[in-house]
Picture 1 (cartoon, helix red, strand yellow):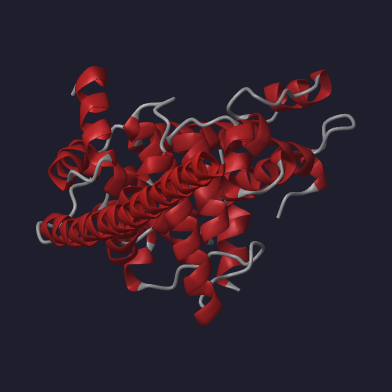
Picture 2 (cartoon, chains in turn brown, orange):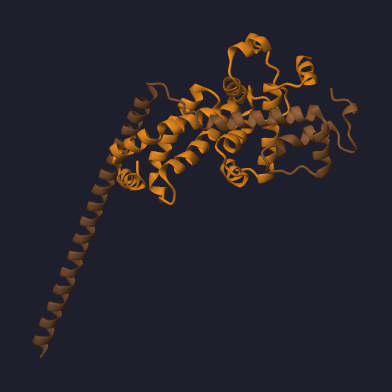
Amino acid sequence: MRSDRSTNGTVTCEAVAAALPGIVDGLGVADLPMRHHVDGCLRCQAELVQYRKVLKALHQLRTEVLEPEPGLLPDILSSIGAAGERRAMGFLLSGRRAAYVGGIAAATAAGAAGAIVLASRARHRRVRLAS
Amino acid sequence: MTPEEEATLVAAAKEGDSDAFSELFKATSTEVYTLAFRLTGNQEDANDVTQEAYLRAWRSLKRFRGDSRFSTWMFRVTVNCAMSHLARRNKTSHEELPDDTGMADERPEADPATMAEAGALRDRLTSALADLPPRLRAVVVLRDVYDLPHDAIAAELGITEAAAKVRLHRARRKLRERLFPMPGEESARAV
């Protein structure tokens, strides 16, 4: 337990302890009374040093690279391969569907064009006969 | 791998070339696995998250616009997968401790003398990280290990910046208490 003996002016060890996690990396700022308290309090200085050690150790984890177990990579690659085959099949099917729809559209367009030509010829014939 | 080589492989993978994707996978898998391990705290979940992240990446590669490096994109996909994985697991399990629960460690190897013999600070830190509640662990890993700014962490985790700061504060305090308990804290934890 922290006691009142740690009190220095208006700032207590409890107040410092509550603030330290937020200011240890320099992003938060300790106000002047708090800094004065830490300067004169060995306990708070020790706690600050401990936070700095934790932070330093966390930073050092960034350089540590963990190797996945050997079986994991082949498993993932085979899953990706299977997913790739499904996707390729999807491409093929969607390609065939597009060709099928395109064929029907082309045939319909050709039929319509033929009907228009035949209709216009019949009209010309009727006009010639009438004249 | 140069950015140009990477862009070529990404373009090929987008067209369904799984060999190109495998090359991208080989270039990034160790980093992805390490991040997954840091976020989940154990090997089994890290394996699942790594697998899930690459499958999700493969399926949604068309949406990758190439504004960032592939590895950066994979980083974000992995964080998302890890958070979804942990959230799913927590729905079916009640093992997670609330944020304000103490981290009393009653394992035999937690005896201070044994721990001093057993290990380096890094090993103890890895263990302490693994014991943190997942939402605290995610914030402290992204901020203090991967050096992401608070706003980016908030965006990745779908929380406010203020919430990210509060979680970071709690996580650091718990790690400090676990790794360097003050005299009063040791007796308080033992109760």
